[in-house]
Amino acid sequence: MSRIGKVPVEIPGAVTVTIDGSTITVKGPKGELTKAFTHDVAFEIADNKIKLTPGNKSRFAAAMYGTARSIVNGMVEGVVNGFSKSIEISGVGYNATLKGKSLTLKLGFSHDINYDIPEGVTITVTDNGTKLKIEGIDKQAVGQAAASIRHYHPVEPYKGKGVHIVGQHEIRKEGKTVA
Picture 1 (cartoon, rainbow, N blue to C red):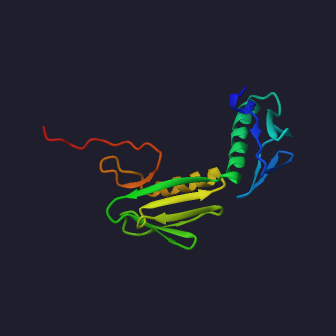
Picture 2 (cartoon, one colour):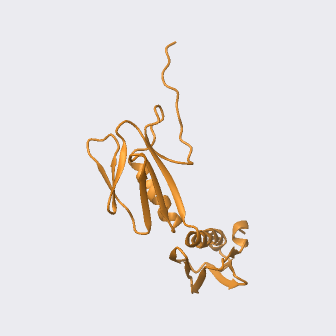
Picture 3 (tube, helix red, strand yellow):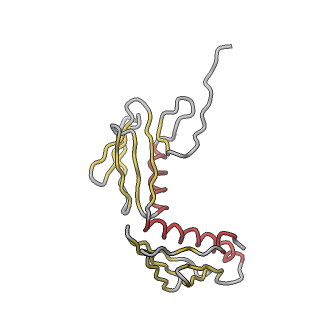
């Protein structure tokens, strides 16, 4: 049994949660999120808490209800506080510019990279295009946007040039030395 799944999710006062079969809708001050789960997880609301239990006795249900609890907790936290990730771009001539719903990245290639910003995610560019802040209410969408931008030019291990997500560890290597 999952230790995480046993802990109920607290519902703050400004949040309303609706359960329709295996679909959960969470509304809060920052917006609304809806997620459909498999029937292997059962939900119930009692005393301003969402309690999750495995829907059946299968091994998959026992594994999934902890994951479902974590996703529901992220939904509640997202509509109340939102999520954000910071990105730093380092390298000579490396920068980003925002043009409407598109982010243009200059990362040392012979061409610019155009990244279409997904729905529900906002990106702000500061410090002459070297710092980005990705914000939204959906934890998965914010993380995926940051990972997609990083994927275009991950940090190079010797000089540290590239796209770096703040808070993630990057491996740095020592260069060649003269003996």
